[in-house]
Length: 405
Image 1: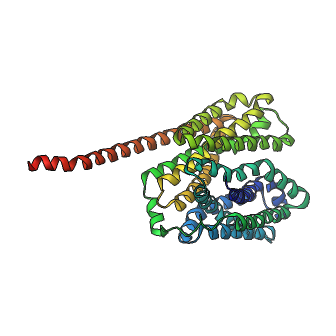
Image 2 (image 1 turned 45 degrees about the vertical axis):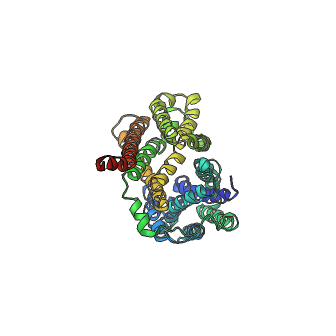
Image 3 (image 1 turned 120 degrees about the vertical axis):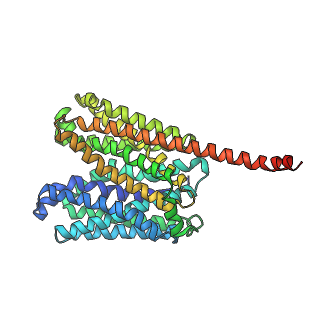
C-alpha cells in the first residue's frame, strides 16, 4: 500500500474529529454563548447540511481540476472553517462557520477514494478505501475524546484551533505524499460527471447507503440513554464505552476492506445481515453491563464492514465519472445520519422503550438489504441482456451468409 494513503487518512482523522466532537461540547458551547442545548444542537445539523450540499457541489465545480489540487484546496477550506469556528463572536457566526466546515467533508472523501483506488492494483481497491476511512474511525477512538477533554479544560474554542492544526498537518502530508501522476485532471468533465448520476445502479447503491447507515444512526444517536437507562452505566463511563464503538468500527472497516477485495457484493450482504442481527439483539444485550459493552463494539464493527464496499460499489457503477458519484455517497451517509436519528427518535417518542431505536434500526438494515438485492437483480439482468447482445452480434454474419446462399 502506498504511503500516500497516510496523507488521506490524516485528513480523514481531522474531518472525523470535527464532525463528532461538537456532540460532546454542546453544554460548554451553550453556556458560553448563552443559548439552549437544543439551539446548540443546530450546530451539529449545520455541519451535516454543509456536507450534504458541499459534497456534490464541490465535486462538480472541481471536475476538471487536478485531484491533488482539489484535495489540498478542500483541506484549506476545512482549516478556514474551523478557524472561523474558534473565533466566532456569537451563535449565528458559529452556525455559519460550522456549515462552512462541513462543505469540504463529502468531496474530500469522494475525491480521496478515487485517488486511493487509482494508486493501487485492482485487487486492492477496497482495502485502499478502507485505509483512508481508517482516519475517520480512529477519530472516534482518539481524536474525539482528546478534543472533548481539551474543550472541557481549555475552552471549546481551543478544540477547533486544535482541529485546524490537524488540517494544516493534512495539507502538508497531501502536498508531500500524493503523487502528481495519479491525480491529473480527469478527462470526463462536469457533463460526464453529471451523466453518471442518471444511472439506476448508482441510485440503488446510494439508497443502500442511506438505509444501511440510517440503521446505524437510528441506534447510535441514542446510545447514551441506552447505556445509562437500560444497562445501568454511570454517565462518566459513556466516553470510554463510545471509544469501544470506535474500536469496533476500525476493526470492521479494515476487515470489510480486505473481504470486499475478494467479494464486494458478498461483503456488503454479509455486513447488512450482521448489522440487522446486532440491532435486533440490542434490546437484550443492553439490559446487562457485561453484554452492553461488547454490543457497542459489535455495532461499530457490523456497520463499518459495509463502508468500503458501498463506496467502491458507487464508484464502479459510475466508473466513467466516479468523483461526483463518490462524493454523493458521502452526502447519502449524512442523510442517513439525520434520517436515522429522526426515525430512532420517533420510536422513542412513541413510548416503545429506551432500546426501541435499535429495533427501528434493524428494520432499516433489512430495508438496505432489500435495496442491495434489487441492485443485484438489476445488475444480473443487464449482464444477461449484454450477453444476449454479444451472442447475436457474433452469429449475425453467419445468419446473413446462410440467407444469401
